[in-house]
Length: 111
Image (tube, rainbow, N blue to C red):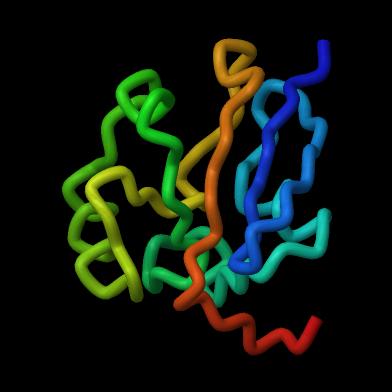
């Protein structure tokens, strides 16, 4: 069963994407052309896949690990509901999740 995730890019444009349980949020966003660099390819060694989770969804996600919290300290424009998209694997309960790519995001992939 498809899981719909809405990304809001730095310009405020919404992109609805469909994934499956187990898909990674970073990979889903990259496939949709969003400016999520993911330099470390999900190894939690950077913060270039930083997203801001909609407040109403933040508490529904599994808690960030201590390592993720440490990396978020380096994320440009981090907020209380910030997460690394590489650390979020989709579950059916996430259907309807909305995340925003912060305006401070820079994607060196040149897409």
